[in-house]
Image 1 (cartoon, helix red, strand yellow):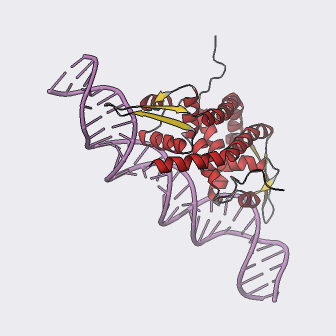
Image 2: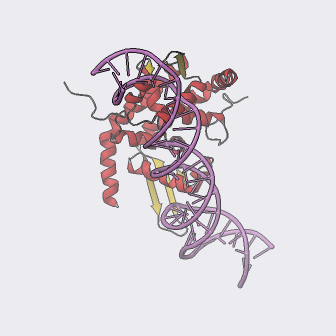
Length: 122
Length: 122
DNA sequence: GTTTGTACAAACTTTTAGAAAGTGCAACCC
DNA sequence: GGGTTGCACTTTCTAAAAGTTTGTACAAAC
């Protein structure tokens, strides 16, 4: 009998942990979910993901591209034109992230109430 | 016609973004998923979540407790005994995170292959 | 001709994460 | 009885990450 997967996010050195962090990191989730809405150019995406710096967006997209969630299509024109979209694998995973976001957004009234209770108790 | 939810993670100042980060941050996801397996004491959880520092685990659990995903039960004995578990809301959200983790783990062979292709191309 | 936009990279600064040590006592080892 | 270990953290210090700013090479709009 063998394990179904050889990867375990609970193990510090498992490569799956890095991949999980690319997806769930502060900007990874937002980039994935934004790209699920369609194809975006770099600065377009930057405006969609409110608050992200150029550096972090570039870094995030590179990691997601390397892991095969995001597809990057560049035209060597001046000014440059680069289009980002999800791969098929990316689209699949993005749907899980969308589910999570919707869940969080719908729970927010309860979350706010819980915070008030917590802060009141100390 | 009104929006279904008043919260939007794409807006920088929306409180839902902070909550999302507590759940999806490097340690938030792992803590939530670990706690879905049952009740844990602090150091037990620390051993389960390989690589987390005491400071970050304490901080992560406090944020999750404040948001109402985690329940903390402390006995004022010496030595202290503190038990952490998920609330009902927490259990529900943890299941989404487990789905995500399983998805990532099962995709890892493809991810590794994508990385090799990416690194080979530059 | 000055500003604006493009998609970044590099240098520098600020914020955050992680490592180490302290707490106050009790239970175990020898 | 003396030293070590474990408990659940907090505080202090340092290393790493995030964020800000500047530069690029041009082209189109004002």
